[in-house]
Image (cartoon, rainbow, N blue to C red; front, side):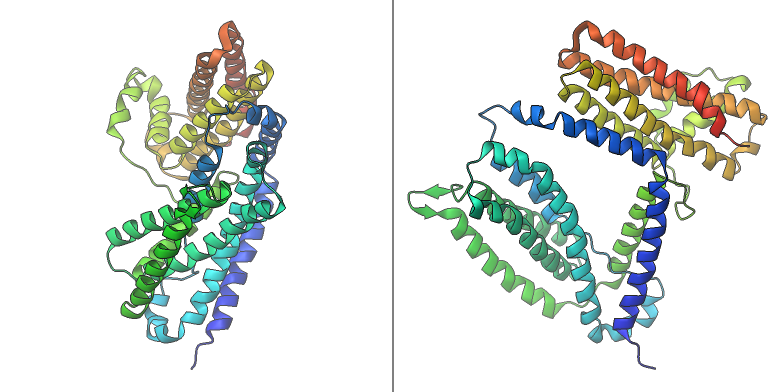
Length: 411
């Protein structure tokens, strides 16, 4: 029976689309999305003030080229492959080019959306610091999108290489080329211009010719690395599920952990006693989790940067409250995960005791995060107002942990 690869792609793409729409509805109904939108509105309110604070000596076009090149070069490939494809599709490798061409087109379109949003975010910065006409503005929007398509195409061919180290070297080369072109475009052709000669354009042309020849050789010499493609697909699927899991619990996210022995001293701060068994349990689950600790640190960094950048005390306080609420909505998942597993039967603690222990751990983690963000604001010049931020952190942490959280805990 002949396999219809076009129908296979359409079926898997439709299946993923239905799943994406279903989880998008869950995310839209979650409270964290509202908090994120509110925080985004607060950033937009002060965005012009942040742009005006950029000093004249700061190399804006090169900084933009540096950041945009990172997103342009990053090209994760979704192929919608499954484990069974290693058995059923590998014999059809000679016919798979049309299937993979559609996946590349899909990846380019999806990744270009995120690239467009980044360009939209930086557009006021570019306009405020560069004298640009309408033609230059078209280059600002089109060249990164075209470069993204080139990176998607070239990185796909490079996935045929058997050695991972070669992929890293080629990824660095693609980044340098992307930075060269974007810096040349964002500076209106002034980058590496000597006299009347544009060395950036010359170097870019020579590199593109040589790189294209090398890509053509790799494409003809090596077959598809099916295990690598499947590993990449599984990794992208897990990232999608972990992202959705930040808004709502989904069954596809498993319970993974790491020992992290270097964090054990933080657990020893809690006295070792039967009365503190629940606190130690939840604290270890947090420190060893693969997701919660990372989310906690990322939100801490984001909150600290926003508290430093925002000049108004009210905005700093609002940032602390929003970040603590976002963190709390994530930490709450530890309770649900522990109740689903066997942790509830490992210690002689009744349900009410576990609830009190979890409230304590949640309150301590939120308070520490709020205090650290307040200290960052103080280091940026908040002065004596930092004590007000300390008070906001305490009230938000206590209010959520002992007034809001108990309503959401279920045995």
